[in-house]
Amino acid sequence: MKRYTREDIIRMVREDDVEFIRMQFTDIFGQLKNVAITASQIEKAVNNEIMIDGSSIEGFVRIHESDQYLRPDVDTFAILPWRPQHGRVARLICDVHNPDGTPFAGDPRGVLKRVLKKAADMGYSFNVGPEMEFFLFQTDEAGRPTTLTGDEAGYFDLGPLDHGESTRREICMSLEQMGFEIEASHHEVAAGQHEIDFKYADALTSADHIMTFKLAVKTLAQKNGLHATFMPKPVFGINGSGMHTNMSLFRDGKNAFADPADSRGLSHEAYCFIAGILAHVRGMAAITNPLVNSYKRLVPGYEAPCYLAWSAGNRSAMIRIPAARGMATRVELRCPDPSCNPYLTMAVCLAAGLDGIERDMTPPAEITGNIFAMDSADREARGILSMPGTLKEAIDCLKKDEVICDCLGEHVLHQYVEGKEKEWDAYRTHVSAWETDRYLVMY
Ligand code: GLU
Ligand code: MG
Image (tube, rainbow, N blue to C red):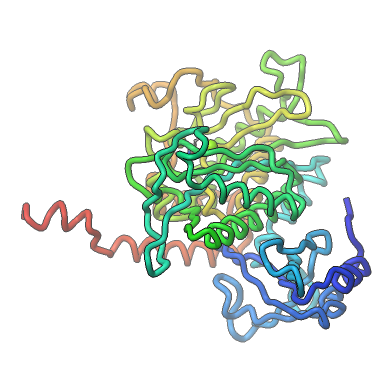
């Protein structure tokens, strides 16, 4: 649904005392980028005439082909509530295009749009509702982040145990001012860990929301003297942070995953979608769980999934079907973590699910027992595979998965794999404190 025209944007900038407009986009590794323009440039901006030099952006382009144009999506216009309210700051989320007007192949938002178009051609729209978890840590005298929380609260606890409560409240209020519908916010299991859930939306809006969410959380934490992190496993021995991703396909305004005639209330398409995700989830892992550190979260014992299974109830399975049915029928994928690029994550999830539908795949049997309580022989007997154990294994799985490679396209795939292989190599050759603690005296 269209909210604004170009003329609306020009008018709002004038009437709402907007002084700066941040033209935002995301690089392939999920970092938000922006170029700020002044209000005098707004007509140029809505006419797609703002140029950037893509050569200095990770994974974008080489120096000799560096000019790119930003095409703002006018429906994303929003005022940043945490900036001064006189001479205000607004933002527009942009698509990146080549000088000849074609979409730039390295723009993650463009990758998602491509898969959404494929879904639309098959008659589907794709809705996503993420559950964002993060930590709020204290900073030291120099303002540097620590991993101390000063917080002994646990799941669903409330103040005064929960020191992050007022920060969380400010985050929710700011996001509401930006048009978010916040459904729930609570303290998570670990000390200093929080979760805020916002209402599901079409995948593109949802991915834009995730980028806005991360910026808001980091900015407002900093204003409160705290450091917010979406690092998947910041502290050994306690829960990490996930980005459980709730997904559904709609057709003709109805939820295509719902079928009241089925014993679980799920449609044939829902089963195929689940099967497609399970068939590709190892190939998707380098995108959904992109850091060396992501694989330290995907270990048994901390409510994060490590085994490839689905279940209608069981939280130990990687795919869970939450109890709600009818319009709210959905598939919850529990492996993604909030350090991922949300555009690429939604693109690969959709591509995998659609592959399941196109090939009419059947999922393996539902696992109702606690998978964490099974030993490896039990799991092997039931054919339950594991997620990749390291970023290296995930990169190798990605390279072998044609559907996921196709979905990303050659440009993103190449740049992404190259960047992640470098990251792995830097980690692999680094001598860590764990090693010196363990070996220095013993050998
Ligand atoms: N923090 C857990 C994870 O890493 C999830 C906890 C929950 O079920 O919300 O995925
Ligand atoms: Mg949670």
